[in-house]
Length: 482
Image 1: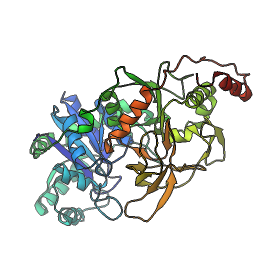
Image 2 (image 1 turned 45 degrees about the horizontal axis):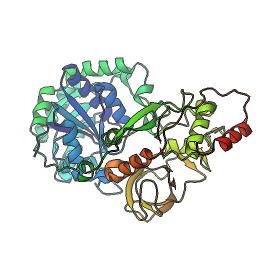
Image 3 (image 1 turned 60 degrees about the horizontal axis):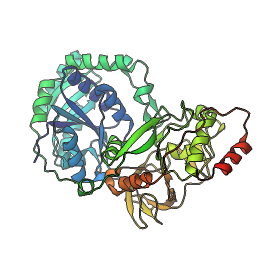
Image 4 (image 1 turned 180 degrees about the horizontal axis):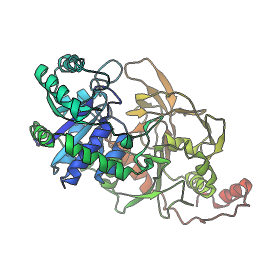
């Protein structure tokens, strides 16, 4: 049993300001030299980037669908056992889960982790109506909602709301945040733009922390977090019993503005299992890092940087040559798009990509196959055995003319199935995002495959512009499997 001071900041809906207020609270505690750990409910990558930008340490996802209760509790304790304070940012509205259930919702995570909840409520356009709104949240199901933070109001109106809410509900009001236009976080088709893309992000976060210090009851929040019940946690035997390779396994991981969607625990578990992850940029670098034995191409926004990716010919050639020589590779979503023949944007412009995979990626105006899914392997793959089921998540506005057929994807609570994933002995590529804590064998299988691959020798960094595709083909033919 472990006691972890923690609370969840949840919303009555998306867009209430959860991420902004989460960052403001994290910044204040960080300024007070408190050891703080941040988490995100669900599969979102972008909010965790903002948490990391504030704390300068990783933020972790807790996802009941992909991990299950025991793993969520394990990871919560693992990362927060020495922290003064842990904050979990909720997802969507508090009760919003898969389909018309509360499965994988903020409510479900708070319930399973016994975490006290503070609701973020936007007061725009409401007076007394805020009371029945909150009463509805309190009475819908047995829950751990203990208080609220009010958003988009001034000090003058705060006293009005606080008195009314505390008189007519059993909730404590833990302060407010005024609307600060200069600190507004911009959005893109997958939600917020990434933290690294926000102009003057440091000054915006500093301003949020300063405002929070004036208007939020931090002493009350700490007391609430410290009232959390102890958690029962269990070890993960697949991790404890794994025999690491004798030497470090060097794996190149694409990390730049185009490829930045990675679960912090996926990176850390690979390192725990014996991997040394070597960052590289398909945007900026001329070739792959020397000495790597595997490649990870994560999700991100390759469509936003399609022109620059397309023009970096030497990197595209290096990746194609490495994969044709059998280098193990995981490519998710944006990485999957990058390995195909081309990416076509909504304006009709088409940009050639690596060309290792058949198929052409193209942008659409709506989310495609959005949400949780299960993958059932139709054959043995680099990561999975035939018949193995893996829980995953998709979130993309693009599609492909060739999504693969190594697995069958299916939606929970829906009679919907489709073929997906391109898989070879050394490749696992497709739109779904996977979490290694769904099944640790996904990570160990990748490590073992990489450990058996010969380390990448130096590749010429600059190839003359005059060399055309036929020359590249001849080089491939001459080198063979070298």
